[in-house]
Length: 477
Image 1 (cartoon, rainbow, N blue to C red):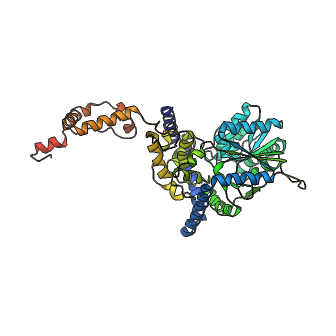
Image 2: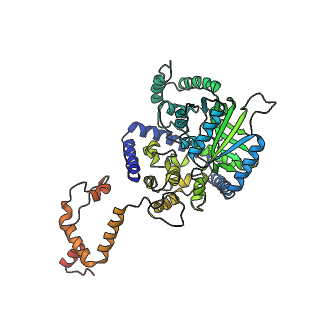
Image 3: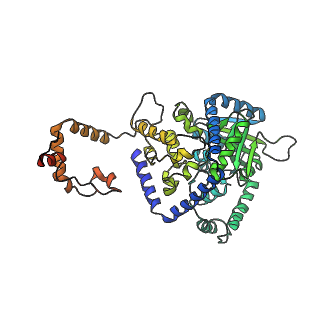
């Protein structure tokens, strides 16, 4: 399993590097996002103060996580929101399917939700006779092509308008070919507006869940989140258990740094505060609101004081925008729901560090991700920790798949190397063979294949240093 995953990542990354259109799309998009973010933070001191405050809020929320989750459930229940707990993605999918089937719902319109991507909810529902329609424009674009998001904020960032124009003309009924962005948006809006009106249920993610008031906060720019949560009679919200914060006062700084870090906006177009179903005197809104809180390995991550910082993430995507690896290979190369730097530390902890051993090594450790993270997650340090966990089985560690990335062949290679270095006679014999026969090794020899994939195969000198010293009359001690 480990070998298969590693090969897939390397092959897809190599293919991405050979795709000039993909690289151009990402380079243009990333440069724009970086510039917009910089414009929102002209004063480094103000930025650092906001980062420190946001980090403190997220850290305090995690420190009190069990207490805040219980308070959130009590507050939501008081507001008329029904709360459900799911330990695994399978349980969460079954919960949602049960809610839909109990009400005879056959169509579900979805706002943007990375947790639903984590659950592979769309495929599960479609296999059980429920049509799930993505209403976020980027998500709608990739759903038409049967793709997964390549970015957690901008799912279709890997496509340019020409590619989308061809796609719409082929996939949307009666759509004419046009490269005008406004016309393309209008095509999608026409389809989705009808879907909003016909849908039996709506689903959304949750950016922040307020324990004190039982409020679900939803950040968006298109209005589709508001339509998904208010037009259908049933609203189902899904969230990872780490999204809870103590009070509404805690939301403001997080919201301010989220929008600036994600898209370079001072505020988003829409900010929804959902605190319950439609009231008796209200004319719109869902008649039922359900909240599904997903674990999926998060409690295991939470149990480790060092790795817990992973759960501070507010899903802004800034680490991806500044990552030299992500910006060159794109999100799909990671073969994961969460790509980029945050995905490199989150996915291995969820799926198992042995299975996703390739991801923790898919980094240059340049530190750019840690420098821009709005909640100061030490991504490089966690990557180094996970690299160690992949090959060492520490009895005190709770990392999933710890030690399973260790290879017996690599162990024996290093043992042989150590044995040679400890024995002078063996070392001299090995260097003699290397200097006399090393140059005769054929290109692509298995032991050197990984090194020579991007480098020239090394050729040993004809004589060792000791031999040269002796020949020149010097000491080699």
